[in-house]
Image (cartoon, rainbow, N blue to C red; front, side, top):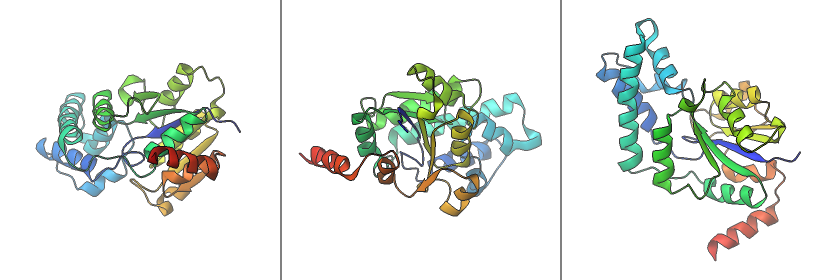
Length: 234
């Protein structure tokens, strides 16, 4: 199989999340008079954030209330990603980006965040030169697990065959997005919201504990990875 596009999730997959997302959910919901526990948010990681908020509100959800809480959530996330310590690439993210691009595989990021939050992360990490595309859930008709972000990127790169796509993420919605898009390979990582045991029921093609394991799944051998490491050290 020849892969042409690798689509990575952001928080928990390529970027560390020391509890920022859950804290922002808890803070915004509590400020609106709907207190929740951080653990309640975990099952909603990866979803478009207004949808996650509506699910958290349940019968109390109204469009105005969801919008107000989401605005607060966005403000909290922007402060975290622009200013807070602990925002960093996960191990293997940057070296994997470089290695894939060196082998003709485009690297893209997508997310359940809105575009402003995604841009704040990429700017903080100075990743604009390390990736080929970024797309967020508010730029398409539906967020994950719908395939719209993946499909938009396939069109952007002129790829007619979805099997050229690799989807990598840390949640069940990432896995289902890949499946719904017809990706040739769907890879789950254990660095984010869910453990290996929690990911297995969603039947990704592979589960890895580190992005360092991804190149071998794509047929990129150890010699190429060693060459990339030597190049970075030079």
